[in-house]
Structures are given as C-alpha cells and as structure tokens.
Length: 226
Image (cartoon, rainbow, N blue to C red; front, side, top):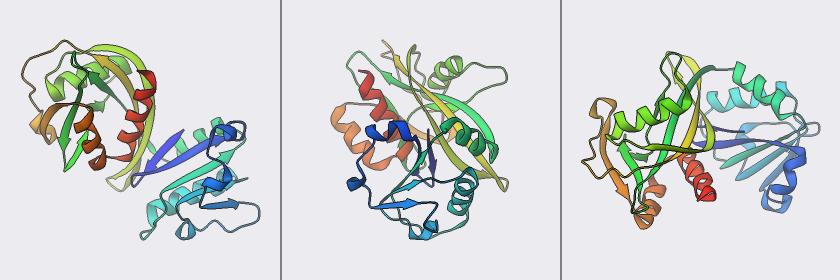
C-alpha cells in the first residue's frame, strides 16, 4: 500500500517483502520505533521506520498533515500485518473511491491531460452503485472524448487532501486501456482540463517531470504490464 501525502509516497511494507525493497544502505535514515523518537521534522531523504505500532503510524500521518517545512522524499513503514495498518489508516479519513485509465492508441501513444498546471491521467469519482471498471471507461470518455476498451488493472493509488476541514483519502483503481479512436480530443473544461493530448515516449518523459508522484507511480506500474 502506498499513500501520497503532499505528493510524498508513504509505503506500508510487510517485513516479509523487505527483501524486495532497497537495502538498508539505500535508505538515508533508518529508525526503530521502539528506540528512537519519531519526529517527522527529522525525517530526511528516504526514511525507513521499523517496529512502529498502529498508534505511532497514526500520529506520524496526522503530523504530516499538520506540519509544514518537512523535507523528506519518501517514507517506508515496515510492518508485520499490513492489513491491520491499512484498516487503521483508512478509518482516519473520509474515503472517496475513483477510477482512471492509462489509454494507449494504435501508435502506442498514451492519453494525457493538462489541468491545474500539471500533466495528469483521466480519472474521476465513482457514481452511486457504479463499478470501478465502468467508472474508469466513463471518465476517459467524459474528460477526453475518447472511447476506450478496458484492459487489465494496473494498480491502486491512495492520496490525501482536505475538503471542508475534513481529511479525505481518495482511493483510485487504475486500468490499462486500448483504443482505435482517431477523432478530436475534447477536454472537459468544466472540470478544469485545459488540453488533452496523445504523448509519445519522448513527450511522456517531459510530462513526468511536471506531474504528481502518484501518476509517476501509475506509469511505473503500467510499464511493467506492457
């Protein structure tokens, strides 16, 4: 599970999976929650925390929302029971569910949109009783005017924001999609989308320098599928 807070990835990792993670030499800071005080202002670079309780993790996340001037890049929380921690974290927020797509055309270009000064991928909230797969296809058509065929699930992302003084956790399921569409791309301007474009590999590299960490994570997962 990866949660993005202020565009920083917070990774909840099982101890058993630690072998798949970077070695301790690759972390800038390793803290044992039983021995060291966990002050978010002291985190740096890629910080790894082991032996944290659910209460300590909750406190860390709340401090990340409350404090400014935090400069670390990513946080790894190594836990025994990821499901338990995930349940605890989700209860801290108002949950919103969404779905989106990584859409590829016949030329192998990927559908991107530009909104709020950032490159992004089409996505949106589920309607009442709507399935994730249905929502993903609908959002692509509504936001970009592209009809696409649903493929495999890419990943699930979680990112947080504040709405009406409440902390919101947005859970988004991402799907690979294909299309033969060659018509006009029409941005959904009422959603603040300024333009929609097919980007080749070179242009995608440029877009990735001006997008969100969660979107870079989605593209990274997508490339492993193709």
